[in-house]
Length: 117
Image (cartoon, rainbow, N blue to C red; front, top):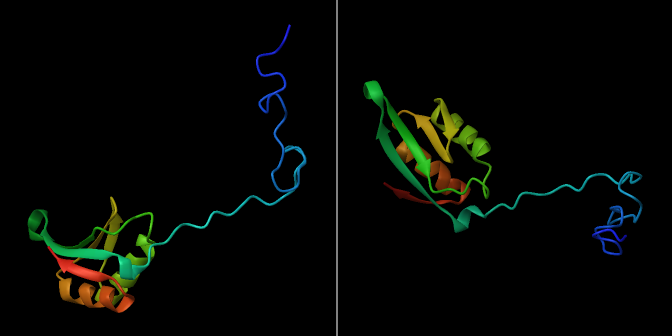
């Protein structure tokens, strides 16, 4: 009786692509995957002001790809520049307070194009 995958690559034990040994015997370090970053010059950030519950005002930076940017690091820079708190939520950067012009200037200094609204 023949096995379903006899003689095919699925019948053979998996081997390492770099050293050729069995995966269970391989001592190669795991491959590091570098995230693909999009240049700031090729992106347009939308900066707007939102009013929240109890009259709180938040400046929101949107339309930046979460995969192409390090949003937490960018948010940290913007929070430091504005001297206020904030967060990254659902791919948006939210900074507490009315800091639209400050954030626009900071993003332009980094290289992003900006639009209001």
